[in-house]
Image (cartoon, rainbow, N blue to C red; front, side, top):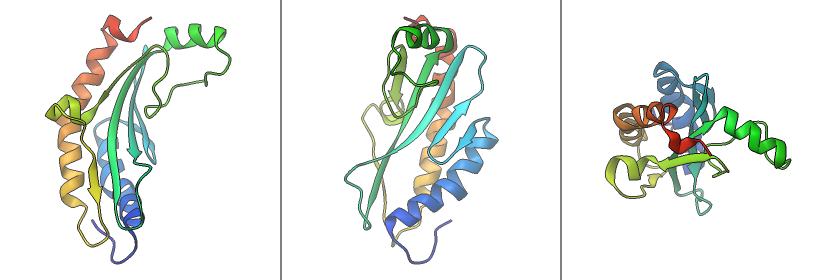
Length: 151
């Protein structure tokens, strides 16, 4: 669904709110805005939608970050490193974090998607959601049993 008129920023926000977020929730994620989490007792399994700092009113470029963080390892590290937050963010590489960009996982290259005000967002949203469905969720779930996400 694309909004009529508005900037690329408006279209991006609308796409996240009306196309990506509802489908991510159907896939089991919780969250809103650009931060989502798959429930796990042992890990934070995070999906973050990261906008490029070079995005403008004419074009928003974004990528999708996947991160897995062992809860116990994070809390242990946090006891020593007081600057660390209560929980990690998918868009910030932190200690004891295993991260992968969706594009690298799926297409073998860092992929940034473009939103422009005069184009529908449906194809971009579908491509992102298909990649999350096909590879992203299984990668996140695999990190729960992997020693890579532990210190």
